[in-house]
Image (cartoon, rainbow, N blue to C red; front, side, top):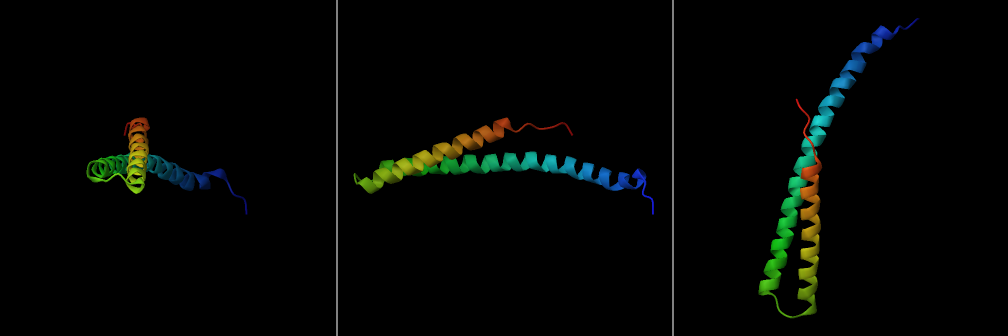
Length: 91
Protein backbone atom coordinates (compact mmCIF):
# COMPACT_ATOMS: atom_id res chain seq x y z
CA UNK A 1 0.00 0.00 0.00
CA UNK A 2 1.43 3.41 -1.00
CA UNK A 3 0.84 6.38 1.29
CA UNK A 4 0.83 9.90 -0.03
CA UNK A 5 1.39 13.11 1.91
CA UNK A 6 -2.16 14.38 1.39
CA UNK A 7 -3.43 12.07 4.10
CA UNK A 8 -1.30 13.94 6.65
CA UNK A 9 -2.98 17.30 6.11
CA UNK A 10 -5.86 16.54 8.44
CA UNK A 11 -3.90 15.57 11.56
CA UNK A 12 -1.20 18.17 10.98
CA UNK A 13 -3.72 21.01 10.74
CA UNK A 14 -5.51 19.73 13.83
CA UNK A 15 -2.20 19.69 15.70
CA UNK A 16 -1.52 23.25 14.55
CA UNK A 17 -4.91 24.43 15.80
CA UNK A 18 -4.44 22.59 19.09
CA UNK A 19 -0.99 24.16 19.54
CA UNK A 20 -2.38 27.65 18.87
CA UNK A 21 -5.09 27.11 21.48
CA UNK A 22 -2.53 25.66 23.89
CA UNK A 23 -0.34 28.76 23.67
CA UNK A 24 -3.34 31.00 24.38
CA UNK A 25 -4.24 28.88 27.39
CA UNK A 26 -0.62 28.91 28.56
CA UNK A 27 -0.52 32.72 28.54
CA UNK A 28 -3.73 32.85 30.55
CA UNK A 29 -2.43 30.24 33.00
CA UNK A 30 0.76 32.24 33.51
CA UNK A 31 -1.29 35.33 34.28
CA UNK A 32 -3.50 33.44 36.74
CA UNK A 33 -0.42 31.92 38.40
CA UNK A 34 1.08 35.41 38.64
CA UNK A 35 -2.06 36.70 40.33
CA UNK A 36 -2.07 33.79 42.78
CA UNK A 37 1.61 34.34 43.63
CA UNK A 38 0.99 38.07 44.09
CA UNK A 39 -1.91 37.43 46.44
CA UNK A 40 0.15 34.90 48.42
CA UNK A 41 2.93 37.47 48.66
CA UNK A 42 0.57 40.13 49.95
CA UNK A 43 -0.77 37.64 52.48
CA UNK A 44 2.75 36.82 53.67
CA UNK A 45 3.64 40.49 54.04
CA UNK A 46 0.42 41.17 55.96
CA UNK A 47 1.08 38.18 58.23
CA UNK A 48 4.59 39.49 58.90
CA UNK A 49 3.16 42.91 59.77
CA UNK A 50 0.60 41.36 62.13
CA UNK A 51 3.28 39.27 63.87
CA UNK A 52 5.47 42.37 64.13
CA UNK A 53 2.73 44.48 65.71
CA UNK A 54 1.28 41.81 68.06
CA UNK A 55 4.30 39.66 68.79
CA UNK A 56 6.56 39.48 71.78
CA UNK A 57 10.32 39.62 71.98
CA UNK A 58 11.10 35.92 71.69
CA UNK A 59 13.32 34.29 69.09
CA UNK A 60 10.36 32.34 67.74
CA UNK A 61 8.49 35.58 66.93
CA UNK A 62 11.50 37.06 65.13
CA UNK A 63 11.91 33.90 63.06
CA UNK A 64 8.21 33.99 62.12
CA UNK A 65 8.42 37.66 61.10
CA UNK A 66 11.52 37.10 58.97
CA UNK A 67 10.10 33.95 57.38
CA UNK A 68 6.76 35.50 56.47
CA UNK A 69 8.35 38.73 55.25
CA UNK A 70 10.94 36.94 53.12
CA UNK A 71 8.49 34.48 51.56
CA UNK A 72 5.93 37.24 51.05
CA UNK A 73 8.47 39.45 49.27
CA UNK A 74 9.66 36.58 47.06
CA UNK A 75 6.12 35.50 46.10
CA UNK A 76 5.01 39.09 45.53
CA UNK A 77 8.01 39.87 43.32
CA UNK A 78 7.68 36.63 41.35
CA UNK A 79 3.97 37.19 40.78
CA UNK A 80 4.41 40.78 39.61
CA UNK A 81 7.25 39.80 37.25
CA UNK A 82 5.23 36.90 35.84
CA UNK A 83 2.28 39.19 35.13
CA UNK A 84 4.51 41.86 33.55
CA UNK A 85 6.50 39.46 31.38
CA UNK A 86 3.46 37.60 30.01
CA UNK A 87 2.54 39.18 26.70
CA UNK A 88 -0.85 38.80 25.13
CA UNK A 89 -1.01 37.81 21.48
CA UNK A 90 -3.56 39.40 19.18
CA UNK A 91 -6.52 37.13 18.69
